[in-house]
Length: 284
Image 1 (cartoon, rainbow, N blue to C red):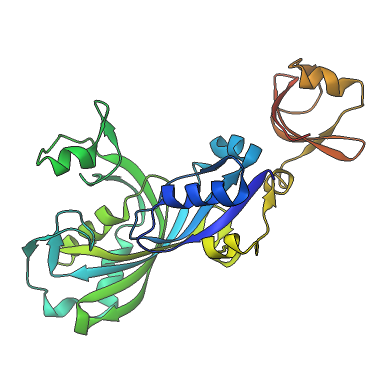
Image 2: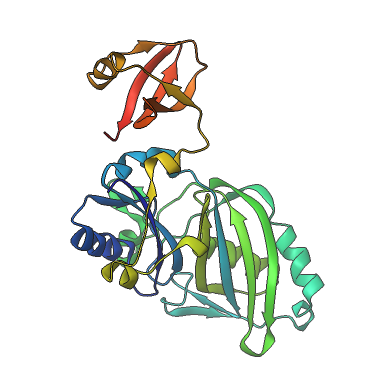
């Protein structure tokens, strides 16, 4: 089995837990394209077998999240798992859809974002959250992110919460975004719920649970299907052994990533550069 399975990750379960369970169930090599926080739910693409070789093509995908932001309290981790370290009143005038939408719209576009201390970013060989747990604070450089769209979903004044959906670039920290939005609203806040509903073209509608996988109730997206939008190149039987042995083959096709076929059979993925086709992911 070589390809991708879309998992709907449950809360309190780590991405590593999901990978380990999938390995035992499938008896295959398994990886993923980017972790979800333990408290987060939603789309987690699992790369299966030779599908793990596709990681470099998938790690830069944009993402869509449904987010719940709790206002009036700030936590040390910027989510519901950390202890409250600050409290601040919430201006009454912010509880109007137009006011909140105006603030949210200010975050659309490219911008610099400061990653949270409780993150897996490595500094001097250690993850930031390891420093944070030791009570240490490091100087962190802001990162460039892009918010493509953000829209208000719901207002829950009785529980001091707003819910919104955000479409953003790779590397965006929703916990930091929540804190920044709360600040613009004149208070403090933390991310209380996070559900990832899309990663690139992978949607929550395609996702299964790890329990479904345990029951054998699942299908997977093959490498051929994963690259269905890429052009194809056909090789005769004499050229296939050369390609498999690492020989670069001359071609008149333009540079890019290609699906490779021989006698209408899918062979794998190749890359053409300066008139030369080289093997990349071979599935046969």
